Image 1 (cartoon, one colour):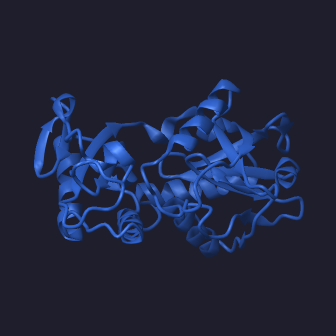
Image 2 (cartoon, rainbow, N blue to C red; image 1 turned 30 degrees about the vertical axis):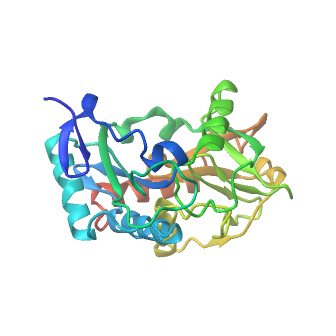
Image 3 (cartoon, helix red, strand yellow; image 1 turned 180 degrees about the vertical axis):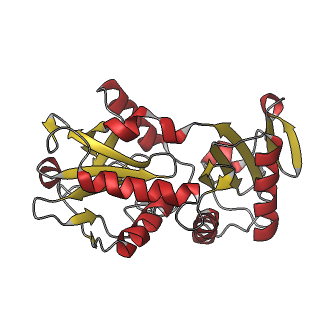
Length: 287
């Protein structure tokens, strides 16, 4: 069966999907996006992702391309047509097509694009073995809370991590505090058994998986402190992990050249991961 994409009202062959050369997403990164994981044909945390999409659009004064119910219908239809049981759906909204000009043109019709990909998330070795991360300076713009498509600094950091044999790079602000990964939120369990992740603000993206995990942790009696931590505090932590729609909860067993704990995923990380996977698979409530 041919893989399909959705482009502005049409389901088209993926290898033939295209947008106009003067689309502002192409020329200015004037757009936002979301990535939603699919487990057992279930779109995980879809409402949370659509909430965040609306916040990003509002922050950029960009209109919604279609109503929320229609957007959800299109996503489900594309997943069905592509027969995706486990994987992701990627959706992107740009301001639209206009002659090249830096200021926002008025009255444009937004461009809406969606694609899917098959990914066997739950059987990936990194979930059980853990991963290495490196620390790098955070060189991104000042509105990281907007899920914009302008990801070049993130791409540079992710490439630097891969070159160092790491899964992720944790970005560090000018005061030495970890902001987040290039495509994930960062967490540690301190030596005093305090579970920390950075508080919300313009310097991090509000992760939908982060929100769900905080809710699940609270249900299980685990307190999460939203507080910045330094690289040194992270290197000295009992446990560490990252979260995102595509990372789920991935334990971190090494930061730079420092082994975390005993070099294996920690007990709290494993419990939280199990609870979150139960949530995604429908064992625990509805994902």
